[in-house]
Image (cartoon, rainbow, N blue to C red):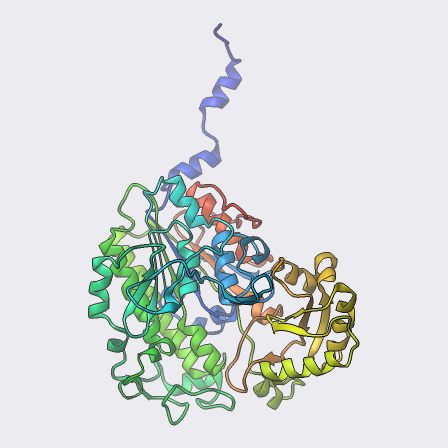
Length: 531
C-alpha cells in the first residue's frame, strides 16, 4: 500500500539542512591524510619559537586549528606508547604497548614493544629489524581505512625509529619503513618480502652517510639564539660523538666519517624523512587514487638530540627552525602534486621532555638527576630492610617494581621506597586499580597483567637519567603536554582552543574526517574542529 506523508514532512525530507549544505560544499574526503608526529616535541616549542617560524609550523598555526592544552593520560610517557595512542585512539592499557619495553613475568624477560621473532628483516640482516605490530592489541585508524577501502587505500609510515613507523602503518599498512644507519630504509617481512624498487633506488642515491657533508651552523645570527636559549655551550649539555666541544659550527663530514648514525642528531635526520616521504608520494601515486591514502611521518631527530643536549640547547632550537622549513617544503610539494586544499594534516608529539635537573639545580631549584642504577641500588637497600614473606626484586623499570612476594608485602615495599628523597608518591597494584588519585589513574591507563606490583613517581623536576641532556617518561606536565594541530579544507584557519583534550582524540577525529569506523579499542572523542 502506498503511504502518503504530510506535505510538511515531505518538504523537510527533501530540503537539505544548513549542516548538510556545509558538508557538501567542500570535498567529501581528502585525497591524502598526512599524519605527523614529532618525537619529544613539547607543546611550548610551537609557541616559544613562533616569532621565528616562516614555514610549516607557521602554516599549521595560521591555516589550521591548534589545541593548546593537549595532554597524555598515561604513564610512562615514551615513544612506543605515545605513537600507539595517536593511531589507536586509546590508552596503553587497551592498545597493549605499555612502554618502549617491559618486563614480562610470564616469560621472565624484557620485551621490546614492536619485536617479533617470527618475522624476518627486509633490506637488512640485523636481528633488531625483526619487527611488526603484533603487540598492538587494537586496530589503528589506518587499519580501519584499509578495511573500509577493501585494501584500495595506500598507507605508508616512515621514521628513523621502527616503533615510530610501525605504530603508524598498523597491522594492514602497505609499508612501514625505518632507518638502518648503514643501508637506509628497511622493513620486515610483515609488510613485504622485498624492498620495493623505488626504496632500493632511494637507498642507493640517499644513504644516511651521503647527508653528512659540509658544516652545520646556525640558521640565524648567534644573537637570535642567545635571546631564546642563552649561551651556546651550557653545563650538562651532551656533545655530538667525536666533537671536541658542544658549540657551533659542526664539521659534519669529519664527525660523520665512519659514523653515519650521526644523522639522527642533526637536521639532516629530518630531511631524509622529507625526501623519502616525497619519493613515496611519487612512486606510489599517493593522493591520486579514488580512496584517501595515508602518509605518516615520525620525526625522530628532536628526540635523539633532546636526550643528548636537553630542551635549552641552541642545537635543538636550530633543529626546530629547520624542521619548520622542512615541513614547509613538504606542504609546498604536496600543493604542487595534489593541489592546495586537497589533503588534511595532523601534527602532534608522542611525549614532551623535562629540563635537565642539574641545570635547574644551578638555577635554584631543589632537584637533581638520579641514574637508573643509583635508583635501583637505593631502592634495593630500602626494601632489604623490610621483612618480606618472599624477599627479592625481579625487575625495576618504567617507574614500577616487579616483586617475588605476595600482595601481603606490597604495602611494605611501597612504604619503604617512599623514604627515598626523590619519590613523590608510591602505590601498590591494588591501589592503581582502584584509586581516584589522578596520578594513579595515569598508571592505571598503562596497566595490565604484565605490570609490576609497586609503582612510584619521582618528584617534579627530578630526573632518572644521566648527568647530561634530558629524558621523559613521567606523568608531570612537561612530559604529558604536547601540541595537537589539524589543518585542511573546512577547518577554520588561525583557530585556537584552550580546553583540555588528549592525543587519544586524534584517531577518532581522523575516523570522522574519513567516514570510517573507529579503531577497535578507541576511548578518545573526536576533536571539535571549528569550520
